[in-house]
Picture 1 (cartoon, rainbow over the protein chains, first blue to last red):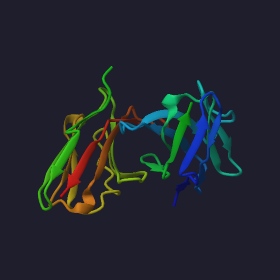
Picture 2: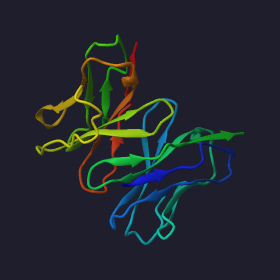
Picture 3: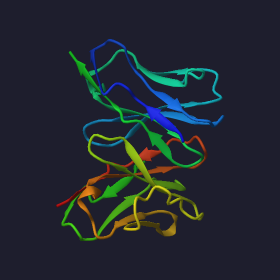
Length: 113
Length: 114
């Protein structure tokens, strides 16, 4: 069965610094997709970035980039130039089959001035 | 354009009562998903609708849970004879389909069973 592991329950980062949120996954599929979502205190899940298993380049979206290491089965999220508004829960997820997303338990990021 | 909307935003109910949660997906999105998020946990898949195909109900935790999607748009998640362990945030998401298309989530319904 597919599984997502996020080992950091909480992270702190100073404003304007970069931070890496860890995510490892387990799957026997050759074709899969990895996602990162942000969940602020309002509760809504906000899509951040996507990486396909066959993508040769690491995905980037503005200040977000995904450090994809296929052999290690890791898909870490890097947030550059952190902002106070980045404080939220961050979830790594993987598409299982063609349907559902399997989510990790999340990392709570707190950005301080 | 409008995002995914859910109603009610909060629902408090007594144990044993039935509840209905509603989801309005983004217009034109063919895929609709329900997830459940218990306190301090990640999201747990419940059910998936894609067009006119039979729904994938593999994540429903018991036969007290059911969902329907009328006209390929609005969806209702029904929980019968609610239990305290059903207390959670129920999130709906929609997608324009395809294997790698991202899912857009609604704000969720916080269900509290007393």
